[in-house]
Amino acid sequence: MSFLSAKKRIIEDTDPDRVYTENIRSFFNVNSRIARKLCDAAVKRGFFDKYIELRCPNDNSTIVSAERFEDIPDTIVCQNCQLNEADKYEFKKEDLSPNTFYKLSSTYRTEKASI
Ligand SMILES: [Zn+2]
Image (cartoon, rainbow, N blue to C red; front, side, top):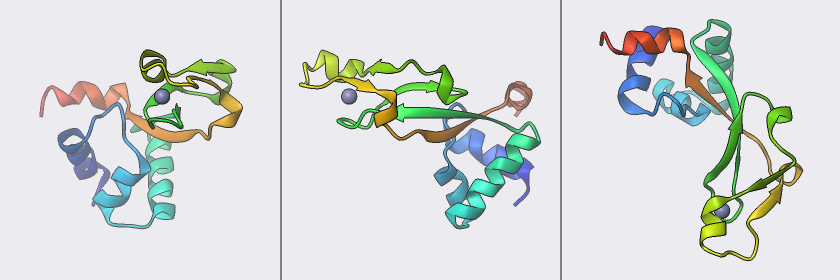
């Protein structure tokens, strides 16, 4: 499958702001290692922008996302857990493992209107 048809499927099947290696893995029907390589290649081609996110250990929701780990504050709050008055809703970023995801780059996004 070419990047072009992958692009089309990503736009049709997923949130272009939240593309995970797993999405790519299943599109291409490849293993995770190859999916990660494809994502890296897509970043190099300007097809994707790479981001990281930290997820709440309680409810698995995304608490924060940023282009770089350094951009994330040391202490982060899960608003879901805070609202639900969970015992723990404040986390240190070092305690959470960052998860990589991709956004369809703005260059490709403008083409979305024409599909
Ligand atoms: Zn939470």
